[in-house]
Image 1 (cartoon, rainbow, N blue to C red):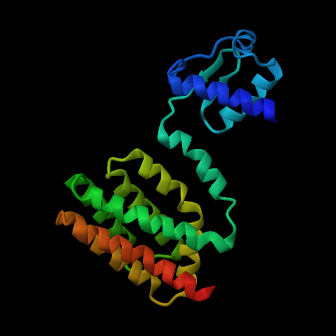
Image 2: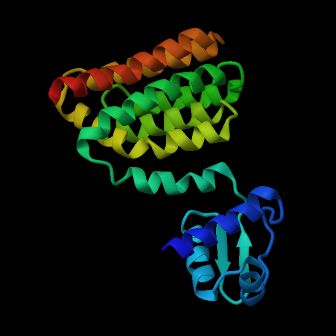
Image 3: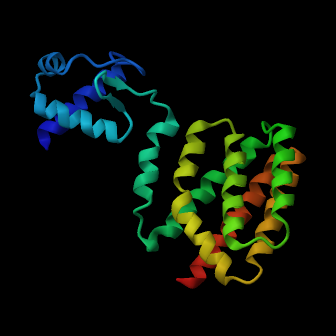
Length: 223
């Protein structure tokens, strides 16, 4: 394992230093192993590990390439790991979302196009006043994803997308058990949208905070 770790660090060093750039093809295995002073076996293990976390892309019959290193691609690994969270850590994930999402919502307040606001309003209108919990949760995810995307920060967008797994389950549970949760969620969405339309970034931030904190507060009361 120590030898594989060394191989990973050496390939990482090549990428960080700029010797290998996004989209570059790695040298042939035998050449690269010699250049880095590694065994071909340890190099293979390192390539396999780096491909799992989307740093490298192994193309059968074509070679191994550095990926685009796009934040969304790299943070897919985080999303995979997050899915293995313990139930008693849901509150911690919600707390992180409460820090990040209101900031992203405020950022969107000065960037989101009117056409996107119209689309979000149409989505809320189509959902109606009495959606099923499953419909509401799916719409909630889409609503916030589109607003966060409008922040213009791809890293923030990817981080919040990766946190959706455990917080989604919390929202479903809340919708099934808490009285007025559906109507409250719809009201909070309308308030966030109204603040964005008014280009009131602080109001948008506040309503996004209220929205997440209400789920967090309810979940605390059940633990």
